[in-house]
Length: 332
Ligand code: ACO
Image (cartoon, rainbow, N blue to C red; front, side, top):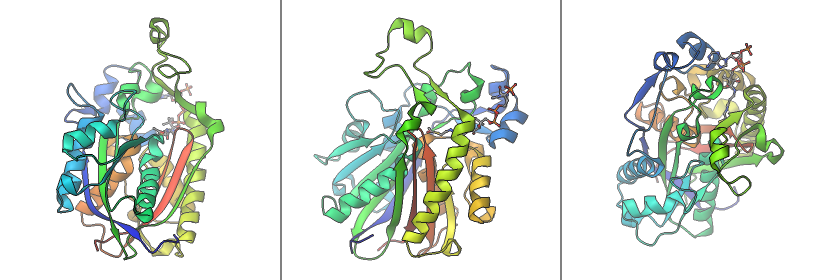
């Protein structure tokens, strides 16, 4: 990173819905089993939004906690970014609702849509905003209610996802903290490997399309699996090299929580033992953009992260999109 200005993570927060849905709960509704879901994905249960819980409410709760942990008040925040692919409304940005909910007056607010890679994209954009001088104290939230896009009769997808939000406060500093290196990328030719067809300008939702279930997500799980392992590993190695480090310097890897077999494969290829990898998808499933900041939050709260530690964040998602970053932990 060329600038001498950095963006330290000074606050962190998370929020998940109240309702817990176990694999056995799902097995009562569709042709699946706890054994299949656990062995193929590592997931045991997930949180699913109920009435009154939507993307902005989870995002607001996570954001509020992050601001409090930073020892700040909402009036100190000068920019709000929400990474989500499941906004409250198709228009306007969910970040505007969050900005209003938190009482952050007049600060610019916008969304980033990069599916499960949203937090990684957000860290790059947010840090650049601070390096350019456009912001000094920025709230970045990654929030998704991905279960909104789920066909609950499709066992290929409905067992995989959960809902949640994770947030960080980024603050300008001259000390080398926060994002040290970042590699983000996309392969748009894989756009339909995982997608929702109806509801956009290309295929506006009609009663007929809704009857066909075109408002739900579909994906080619096996192909995504292969791409995810390759791109997470390649971008992770590039991010570590760009930071001038080796993988031995990384205290913890915080990967996107889609499937424990993807995480195992990434750790194996990077030759990092699983005790240096954060895994919490057993309790939350794949929470899309929120998965990396929720895993980061839990690692910090569990005392697994110390000041000065280098963390490797890596994610992959629909788009296709991916990103890896090296973060240096600590407050200025
Ligand atoms: N319960 C029981 N059986 C099932 C279930 C289920 N829930 N789902 C699928 N099966 C069956 C299939 O029908 C298939 O049966 P068949 O052989 O008779 O056809 C069999 O299990 C094997 O299916 P596969 O698709 O080969 O299973 P696989 O081991 O590949 O696991 C999975 C599927 C979990 C989806 C895996 O491919 C995966 O995790 N892929 C990556 C997904 C991912 O990361 N997506 C997200 C990016 S997230 C984002 O951008 C928001």
